[in-house]
Length: 317
Image (tube, rainbow, N blue to C red; front, side):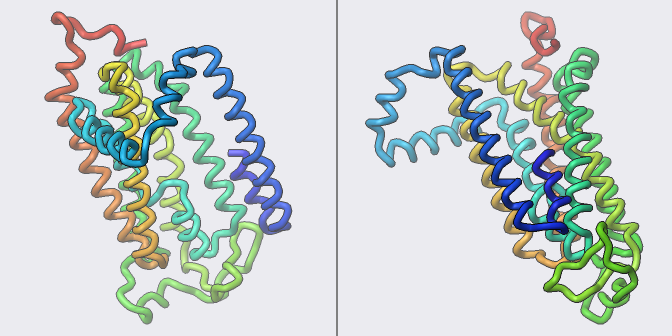
């Protein structure tokens, strides 16, 4: 959130902004190293010399074998559907990413406005860990994931509706029709609205569509983080300790693959008129992932909750 705040400095001085971001990244690195050191002290098993010796003697083929085994363990585990559903969230075209920032800049939204959007979104996401334990205590772990999924789907529908509101260029079929939604010089450049230097001044005729998309971006942060917490706790409680790290590695690899696919969306639909295709496709994929999770909860998830005819107490705090 602090790093996003440096976006306010961009209109004033790009050089100062770059130095400030570098300082924050270095500070974050030192804090992370310090926390890892404390974690190693509190968990002696993480400093097992036998593991270190094995890593030093391993070859690249051994590493590739481990990667393949991790993926196979992930897809064969009983947590594969929740893991895939979590990975599908990395396909979200409305995530806080450079692709979204590029879309906003093409709509002549200034860096300062984008920073406000990112800060408010991060702040709204902070409610997820605050409300998570209360929801789990009251409704149970899997139902909490269902609630987060329903909320996320609802917020995504707001963005889909926004594609068909005034100011949206998604329905533009060609350059001539696209100009109907653009008013050159309709707005004056300001601290909040400013077109990129290499782009002709072309403010949308209305910011109703973009405004509703921004609202969707902010509101969905709680759902994304809540569902992330739910899936991670499911992994902790239902995967044996010996396999947990390997399966988690497969999960991480799957998430990274989905992130790469999302970046390809930005290359395929690189202008603001076609960005709606990325929103629609990512929404359909995320919707399918959540539906799979709901079916999994009905068929397999409920069986995992039962042990000797009683619901696991560990599923609640």
